[in-house]
Image (tube, rainbow over all chains, first blue to last red; front, side, top):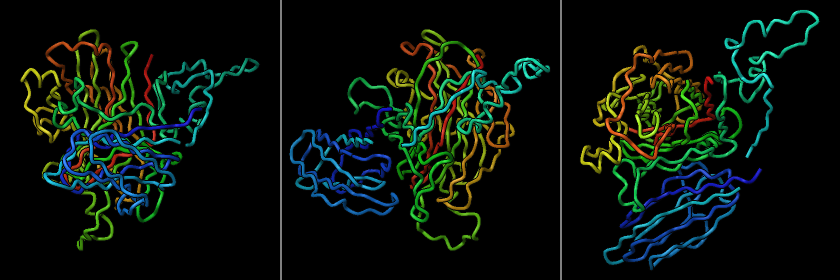
Length: 109
Length: 334
């Protein structure tokens, strides 16, 4: 058999104006994960920090530097050895800060 | 992931009641015939099901997502146009049922189950759909093993008696439905059944219900024939539900949000009569033949012989609600 993969659309044309956390997502079955962020409209700066959790309730930063986005476009980063749960902690800062995004989580065995 | 391989005998999967008695009797000296029901009952993958004659598909979520995808409204390329209530039905997950207190619970058979998870927002629904078409009108049976939980909260109710947990009041409802087109251009109809754990006032009701109005379609919205409401996407008005006769059924919540007990469900409907037939959940079998089924009053194109199965979970509170499905088996009688 071929290996499993799955793409979850975590946020769909969502607009954020300050701090936010994406919904918890279970990924224990996957060996690798890659976040994709499509910044559609952006005023200010969008920063995204990957977080991990043992239970989907209590979270800590995964350890890598935040992804900082200042221009619309598609951005991505990969994670490995992340345990069972993933989410992003985000923040939008600056004058009249606003970010409209699509966020994808791509998982592969 | 666990991938299991199994072999079905040539006798197929017909239940004992469907096998001619003569085929089971073995006169001395003649060739021994296999009892098809014995093949089913001896197969640890399938013995927990009671399929009709032909298995259409068997989804073990240890093997992956099996075609269950987030339901979404129709659009023409612009996701801003998704109608309210149908724009955020959440991607399904492959869950190991892992909790903060006991770790990984696993599924009924293996590690992973299909998980639908709402946002922690009152009346938010998480909805998964499996899409196919039917090759001939017949009886169709959906079977699944499932469990349901609200997310663990930490508000420490001092009135807890050590047995019945107030957390059970944090779970809203589960809905099973179909979207079916009976030919080319219609008629299009939906069969909808709901297990209401709590009502809209938060009281425990624990009963099965059916819809008394149809879910407005994107076409109806664009025709100006429907007013958006985001509390309950299945019906036109949120109270458009009636009780299934004999449908009161306390399920096994088992005291806490982190103890998982799996339930059996079997739902039969008939594509020839366009009617429900029966719903069985654990020990309770409900005769659904007199439940009215509603049909849209206009044609729908590009959905010819559509057969969609839809499963969803809805929270009534600002607490995530989860529906876990260990496995699904769909069969038909021809």
